[in-house]
Structures are given as structure tokens and as C-alpha cells.
Image 1 (cartoon, rainbow, N blue to C red):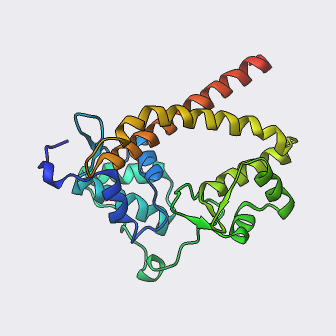
Image 2: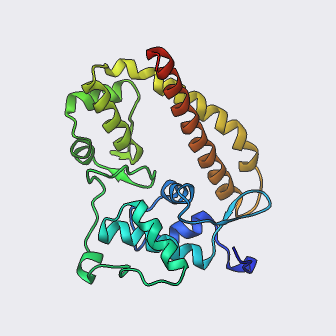
Length: 238
């Protein structure tokens, strides 16, 4: 990747703010996911923080537009990006102007709504997760989802959907308290690691701490998933 002037580089928060007016559902987690899939390759600062240039933002816009307007899978988008990099013509990046202006729901069937900035009403959470009042009451009782100011954070939708699937498989909500306790322990560890950065002065200190915490959280999720998968294989002898 060619060198770019430092002044042209942006943090992941800058990129989020730049893209969100056009793509309201974009989140930092989504950008990290697209990076992990190799669709964008931001530079890294000496301290390891992502730094994006105009080319990176253009690639992200291409990917997000292809997903939103043409519903393309990442495999096809990757092929188109590779063709684009070779200078070959690719299908139009947008559909009609009417589709581009179409409002996006926060609770569509495929939405994870993991961005904490998203706020859901009780009805949106119930409808989006496909659960009833009784299950939601149980989730609240055991601390799996919480309401603040009459609204739920975006992650509550993901939690509710996963919990509903597990309950349908035969678990009870009380069985999920172990997952909540494990998550709380991971949060405590992450807070200890990023705490010193939060105490630093400077305009970017908080943003850098937030990015570091997000990276650590993603690693924790990957570790947990791998350990569970390995344990299940061992338990069933596969």
C-alpha cells in the first residue's frame, strides 16, 4: 500500500462519522469485520491504531453500497474489488436513486444492531427479536438485557435473538446467567487493560481507549467461541 501523508489519515471514529450519514447502520464493529475479511486494509500507527486514507473510505463505501443496494454477498464483492483494483469495469456501485434513498430499518431480520448508539423501544426489541413479553421479562430479570431511559441499547437485539434460539433449543433463561457472568468478568479484565489509557490527557485518548477495548472484546469473543467449539467436539468425541 502506497504511503500517504499523515494529515490525510483518519481514525476509525472519523471514518464512522464520515460514512454514517449515508449508511446509518454502519458501526465500528462492522468496519473491523470488513477489515478482518480483507476488504479494506488500513494502515497502522506505531502504537497499532488503525489509520484510514481516502482510498480505504472509497473501498468501504463500495462494499456498503453493494450490500445495501444490490444485496451482494462478500465473496462477490471481494471479486469485484479485485477486478476494480486491476482496472477492470465492474457493475454500477449503486442501484437507482430511489433505492439509495430508501429508509433502513433498525430491526430488519438480518440486523444485529450492535452499535451502542442505537436505541430501541420495547416494541422494536420484541418485534425485532421475535420474542414475547414473558421472555423479555425473564431476560431483564436475569440481567441479560437492560433498559435505560426507556430504551434498549443495540446489543440487546442480538442478545434477545440468541437467547430466544437457545430457549427454543431447550435451555431456560436462568441457564444463561453463566454467559452473563463470564461476559462481566471479561469486561472487568478489559477495563483494567484500557484504564491507564483513559487517564491520559489529549483529544485522542478516549478514542484510542475505545478502539483498544473494542479490539480486546472482539478477541475475547473469538477465544470464547473457539474454546466452546473445541469443548463440544471433545464432549461428543468428534
